[in-house]
Picture (cartoon, rainbow, N blue to C red):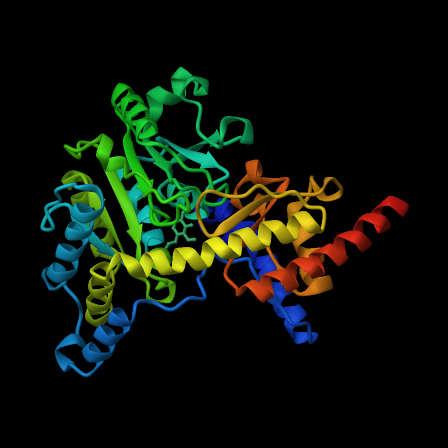
Length: 399
Ligand SMILES: Cc1ncc(COP(=O)(O)O)c(C=O)c1O
């Protein structure tokens, strides 16, 4: 059926998440109590200051029209201030910040600004789907950097063929990493920048989990390794740190040339977010650090409880250092088919997880838990998984 449409749709087509969505919906319709741990959509509320600012804006008719770039000045200033506070980095809010309707918009559109058809872009496998999707839409060729457990899910620069390095224009990374939960050090960004300089490659860093480390550290910005902002652009989202995924607000920050190029692409496609949402987002960015500390406590407890419960049912899932996820190597019976495992699981128990293969072939053999439910619901979900595995494995053994 897709043959009648543009060829660029082809690589975007096969989506295991669509199948899972359908199975979730059918499970609900059949009366199952669905516990949905498949999406990284936090169940906690945004900062009250953000909601109050949005509410005030709704009563202000001057906010109802299109939002042009100069109308976003207050938000951009809040973004620059946030980077200064968090990383000590000086940012020019006029030229080095661009508001986005979600960071996914930014990472998906950036390749249109940077790649000519046939140019190579380096992305990770597994990785976040919009990274590869944007490269395909731009006619670029993705080269997948395998992230393996034995390398702590970090790319291995010396394994990339010289010809690929020569043709590559863009490298897209994201740490703390979804789905593997891996983290990096400031030294990693220095090595990465050296690699990019050596091969004249732009660096895009998708950075929504900056506040999601549980060891008391702030995840390092890639811009710290490129303080002159010569070739780096970073994407921050209000979806995760401030629990505002549905509001669709984020920003790009970094090299003014990259910001200008991305702004050109974006301005052909849409305007900026609703003024009220930008005011709410600015209020969120100015919220005291105690807001972040409080939800981190909640998620740390969930993480500990879920990992302990999984160990109790005989599933030794590693304790992640960061992110809202668990990256769980599948029990042997299902190792080759994470999609089948997730479909069988949701149909039998109502528990929805994400198959590792949805993040690229390198994710096969894993499933991802998003810890987006209260502790008692997580325990309930894991109990059901325990029963399912008990039945499933003996069923498979008999087969
Ligand atoms: C790595 C990564 N980038 C981007 C996003 C989406 O962010 P946004 O809601 O700002 O589009 C997610 C959401 O799960 C993510 O994990």
